[in-house]
Length: 415
Image (cartoon, rainbow, N blue to C red; front, side, top):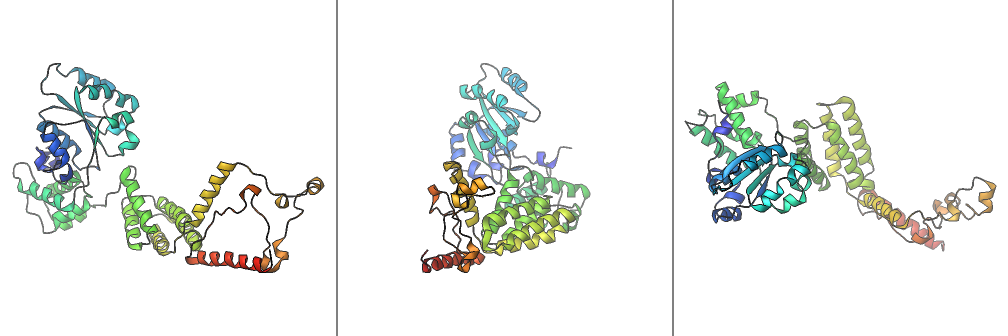
């Protein structure tokens, strides 16, 4: 039997749920389509948001022949055969839909250009990956980018309700109260996934919450594509924003979706150095310990180490002063090259080196009060440069105060 997701596929743009910003009444793209202006376009969005369905509905609305190619299974030869099969005097025109267009290489994408430019075809590409990384600039410049959003829970519930109510195409009801909302919540904005879960429950003859839990439904997390990096970005930005609740939630999303706990811990090690630094030196120690421990014991116990680490990092005082310092110093080195080391700082392992003055004027700080001595440490060309500026927070506030205290002491001594 045809899967429920295919049986419930919308036939017209008005039947599409969750993409009103594109195909809803009054949307700019919809108005352009209704005025007879359908340009080649690329549909970018997560799985199950209706890319194939929209392509089919666009062809129907514009009265175009619909031809579908899969970039996974097809190549330049298949595209050429499709182009050659277009009737030369066909008044309808042809819409070629290339699913997963990001999988085509540069040569294959180049093969589309002359036909898009001539208007012989209307190209509709579909991708789950960022077109800026995966589509060639020439193709991007000749197509309109349409961004699809994950379908909201209420729209998914409407879709599931529609499926249960459609005696010809849909499933069989009734469903236990709260079941459709639970399916929608577990589907992560993916209509195909939502209908697939409903169909599995129908096949088992139990439209109940207990039956849904028995399916072992897990939170969706894409470990390879853009969705992966979006969740990682939210995780890091929540820690940086000192929100432990959001940070632990995004971490839970990754772990529940099967993410490697060591990967999660590595992100926290980097975060501890970049965003906390010397404001709380213990943060880096804790993050490294969590990473080592996660590698040793694995899941599910590693979640305990990661939970402790993420809540500590999110609530620690923040400073990116050390991060800024190393970046500024690296930029200086690249700009000014290998400047000579001042003579008094040079090593003097031989008699000749000493005769040349290496280390001769060096002032040993421990021979001076407070273990500090005024002398030049930077190359001559960089005297006065400042790379590290501690913030007035956490342990770095103490560092800032210590630097200021040293400077006062040196001035009091007339240095």
